[in-house]
Image (cartoon, rainbow, N blue to C red; front, top):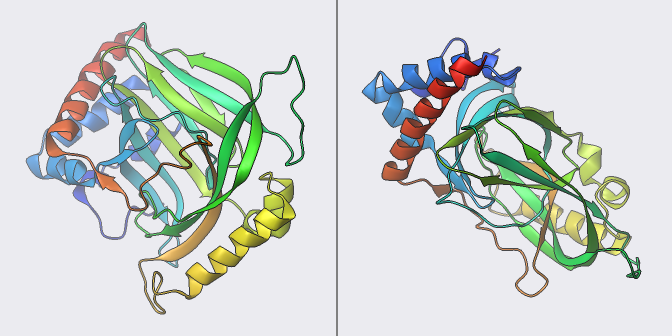
Length: 294
């Protein structure tokens, strides 16, 4: 399984794919201490770390590179801390994923899962529903395995039901389907880490009209609007002909406040050096403490 072609040195760890399996704090500790033992490896990870609006900072650990340069599957580490709470906006993804949770005793990863109701669904007394603004996010893959460019297309509003709220204890894990609408939060002290395995990209049909209507909950008019915007994006200067390091990715769903709309930055945001250093140091302490529980 190939690592990143550009070979950032923090991704040269031979046993990185062990982090995709069952909870293994020793494997996480071994990787993080390997990272911190060399100033160039550490600087490589720090310079690669990005902030994500749901409330975490993340860097890519390893990825499988496909012949066209895009990513087959990957592992990233997501770092959570109470100083970075993020927003509460539900969303879907472009890949199925598995998240293994490493955190101090007494902390919780809080996962909310939602059902998106049909466009014409009425409110019914006795059923708790909330209204959300909807956007179909046309992503542009930068072919480096990290966060893509976001190009959200504003749509109508939709009623949603919060189906469940799960509190995941340390050394727990969760699997997510790409079409599943969810939000992940964090409650507790210290630095928590999610070893986030992302599988292959979802099939292209889910970004076509039928997939958007029947699997991602859009009306036919909304689906046509998003597909047209995606086609225009493919022809625009955003993805120049012959550009090797960009490609049009799937359409993912985003939901936000009906008053303010979808609040998301188009381009990735780099984590500050001081924050990245603090998170990696804290993650080493967390994984070291967890080793005694397995």
